[in-house]
Structures are given as structure tokens and as C-alpha cells.
Image 1: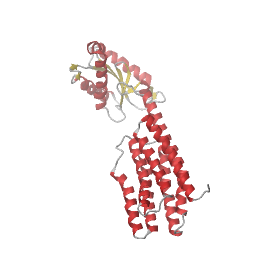
Image 2: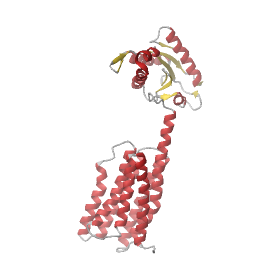
Image 3: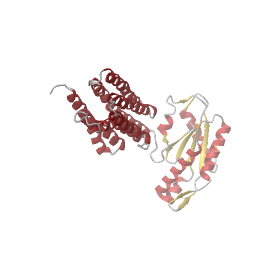
Image 4: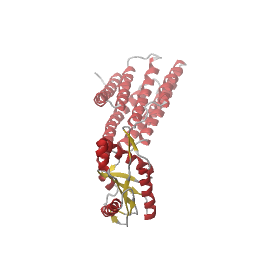
Length: 362
């Protein structure tokens, strides 16, 4: 076998086929829809690339070019699915549609070079748009790298147009695209796996700082807001405790108690602003980080939280559970350690409970 035009096509097709097979096998294991889109894109372009060596039919060639454009659209759709968005968007049809009908019309009119240039130009625009999506939506080094890899296809396509016009009838433009794909496709697929790895690591990080029952932060998550262990700007920490929680568990069971905890987080989260968080510190005790910088404002916010909890009972399993909360307030005296502020809020919480519960103390 010599390294001729057909061999280069075959090698490129086999490369895409192997990568598509890897992603498809991973989809069978995980059943994550973005994997199916990405696998389909690579399998489709593999078939299209090899198809160019089998026929010069004036109708099939536009279909093969459209398949290459569809490969880009499927890659884009996979990214949307990976982001939790609907995979399909009508814009994704524009690339395959434009390449097919544009190439077919121009080639039928005897303008073969113009047909090739038009289709390649559409591919350059489409792949640039797909790369921009990767970079604009989401974060992380791998995500940006994949975006740049896709955008790097555009100058390859533009250079191939120049070669097609400068050397009509030669295969230099096709060989350039295939050679570019050999280099860029490896980086692209490695980048896809890196994106999935980044997401998995981020999910693990979130699990480490999140309370699994309520979805609030846990103690580690709250303390992570202050990596140095000190509060360097004026903030308020509230410690809130659900009153008579043991009675709720005894009356409604642990499922009822879980429902009360979840509802507490939902109601408090509804009144928190930007840069304000709630964390479950353990059992029925919660820490709430407010942006308030003075005691009067902190007291008003704490009363707002107390009221939203006590205002109406929690409906659960056909029963009503009345909820109240006691809240202790501590405004930081910067700089001050987080532990010291929490300790002062805990003392205030004890006073609120000792003086009757369902009240706020500072």
C-alpha cells in the first residue's frame, strides 16, 4: 500500500472510526446523551471521508460534504447536551443544508471550483461558530482548548480554498484538509475526554462541600468561603436551629424530619441575595452567611428569615408540620477568625432558645 490520495482518506476515516467507536462504547456504559452525539459525529465524518474515494457522483458528493457539516453540528449538539441544554437548535441545520444545496446548485451549473469553495467556506464558518460555543459556554482549560482546536480548522479550510483556486484540478486542497484533520482531530478528541474529566472532578468537589439531603453547603463548604480561616471584610453569620426538631421526628418519622429540613433550606434560600449562602452544619443546625455589615441590618434579615419559616406550616404526606426557628447573630469584627464569629453566633443562638425559641438574639 502506497501513501496515495486514497490511502490518506482511508487512514483518516479509520482514525475517526476508532475515536467514534471509543465514544460509542463509553455511551453504552454511561448512557450519557452527549457521548452519543459526539460518537455519531465522528462515525459520520469517517463514512463521509471514505465516501469521497468511492464516488464522484454529482449528487452524492454534495451529500458527503453535507455529512461533514453535519458532523460539526452533531459536535455542537453534543456540547449543548453536555451543558444540560436541549441538544437541537434550528441553527444546527443551516450548515448541512447550505453545503448540500449550495454545492449541488453550483456543481450542476458547471462551477465545480466555486462549489467546492462555497462548501468549504460554510464549513469554516460553522466550525468557528461551534468552537465559539465551546469557549463561551462553560469554563475550564480543556473547554477553552477544544474551542480553539475547532476554530483552528477554519484557517485550514480557508487555505484549502486558496489552493483549490490556485491549482484547479489538483488534490492539494483535499490533502491539506486531511492532514490538518490528522493533527487537530487528535487534539479535539483528547480535549473531549479532558472536558469530561474536568466535569467529573468538579462534581466530586461539589459533593465534598454539599449536604446531600438538602442541597445546601455543608460545614466544609461554608468554611471554604474563607480559605485563610479569617473574615477580612464585615459579614454576618447566623446560626439557626429548627425548634423542637426531635418532636417532629417522633411525630412524623425521619422522612417527615427530612422534609422539614429541605423546606427550611428552600425558604431561607428564597430570601438570600447574591453572595449569601446557607449551610447545614449538622442535624437541624444551619449556618447562614449574610452580606450585612451592621447589627441593625443583620437583625432585620434574621427576623425576615424567622418569619418566613414560621409563617405557614409544611404540608407533607397529607399532614401539616408547624416550623419555627431560633437564630443567633454575630457580625464580624474584621479581621476575625471564622471560628470566633461562629462561636459568638452560637452563644446568641443559645440565648434565643433559652428565652423561649422562635426568636432572634445577638
